[in-house]
Image 1 (spheres, rainbow, N blue to C red):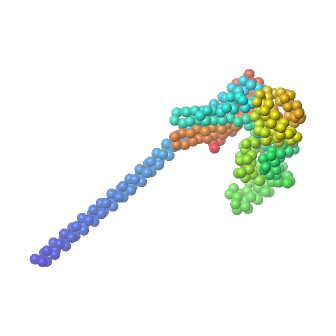
Image 2: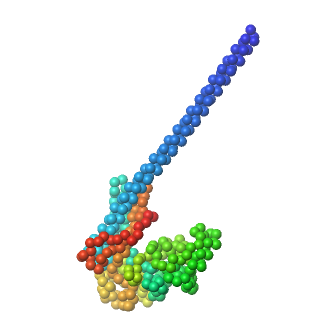
Image 3: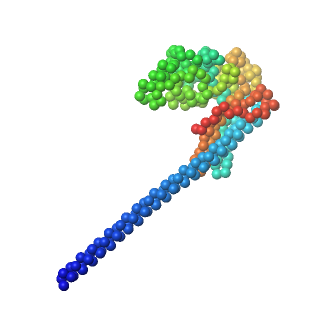
Length: 336
C-alpha cells in the first residue's frame, strides 16, 4: 500500500512538473511572439515615417520651385518698372511667410552686386587685376582679416602656376596637403580659373570656416559678362565695401553717401552729381546703379521637415526694361 501511494505521488509530481514546464514554454512563446510583433510594429512605424517624410520632402521641393518662381517674377516686374536697382523697391522686401497647403514658405532676394565679385581679381587673360586686388585687400583689412588671403585667392583664380608672394599658394601647396594627417580631403589642385560659387574659396589657403563666414556678407562669385568687371551697385552695397572702394574718402563722406541714397541714385551720373567730393574715375570704373545678379534664399517648412534652397538669378535685357519679357535666368541652384 505504501509503495502504491509513493508511486501515485511521484506520478502527481511528474504531472505537475510537466504542466509547469508547459506553462513556462507557453509563456516564453508568448514573450517571443510579443517581442517579434513589437519589433515588426516598430519597423513598420519607422518605415511609414520614412515614407511620410520622403513624400513630404518631395512635396516641399515642389513648393520650393513655386517659391523660386515668385522670386523670378518679382525681379521681372522690377526690371520692367525701373532702370536702376535699390533697397527701397518691392523685390528687396522679401516674401512674407505664406501658407501653402500644410507648409509655409518664406523667401528673400539680395542684390549680388552689392558685394565684391571675387572673379574681378583676374582679367580676361587670367592675369591679376591690381586695382581690384587693392580694393579686396582693403576690404579684408577693414574686416580685420589676414590680407594675404587676397593673394591666395588670386593664385587660385589666375591662369598660371606661379606663386604670388607673400601668402600665395599654387598646386605644390595644395598637393602637399595630402601629407597632412589632419586634412580629411587629401591633396588637390588650384583650378586656375574663375569660380562658380563662393563656397569654392573654402579650399583656398588661409580660409577656414570662421573667415569664410566673415567674408560671405561682403563677397560673391559672379560671371564676368564678356570678361568685363562686374560693377558694385551704390544703392545696395555696404559701408564696408564702399570704404574699400573709396580709399581716400572720410568716414563722414561714406555716411553722407549712404544717407543720400535714401532717395535712390537713378544713374551713375546722378550719384556723381550728389557726391562731388568722390573721385569720378573710381566711380566710373567700379560702380553702377544697375544690377543683373541676385541671390535667392528660400525655406519651405512642413509638418516634419524643411527644404532650403539657394540660387543665383540673372536679369535679361537689363538695358531695355520696357521691352524685357524674358524671365530671369537661373545661373545655379542648390539645396542647403
